[in-house]
Image (cartoon, rainbow, N blue to C red; front, side):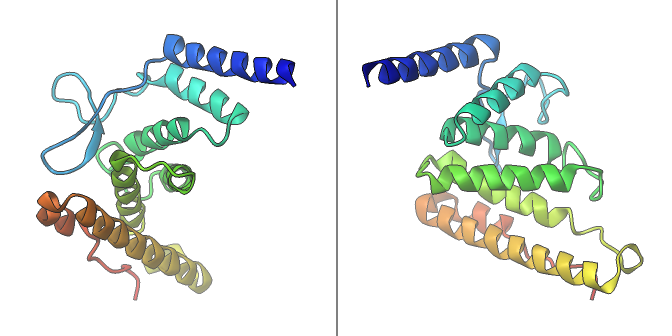
Length: 193
């Protein structure tokens, strides 16, 4: 029993050292608009393309070994969000953005389900749902058949309801920014009637 505990302790120490030495976790801030962002130099809002490659590799390796690590789940979701948000990928149907944001959604939901109570995690979750809604705003009827339209409409409505619910939760936690969070709620409708 002692050897298992010792081995587990050594593994945790090794992973911590690996994460800290290979890739520093990005600094984050909540900007004046109430959005969670990575802190970038100069006027950048979106991180440069390869800036966090070592971090992403380290997070992916850590999540394979420890899929319940809420910190890794949070930062990996943040990386997916940062590189697939509207500011980074403005075209709604850019290949891979919907899939990457869906991965981010699953990761942040898992972190919160595992009792991650950090306010930034809840803010990131709301932002991811808003971005997911945005990815459907470019849909046109000629792009999909009736079944696909119904599926996409249902997904949009689910994400819209979830984003608005997340912002309601944020208002309860930080009522000083109630106006900002109400403004961020998704009010649009699925574009194909």
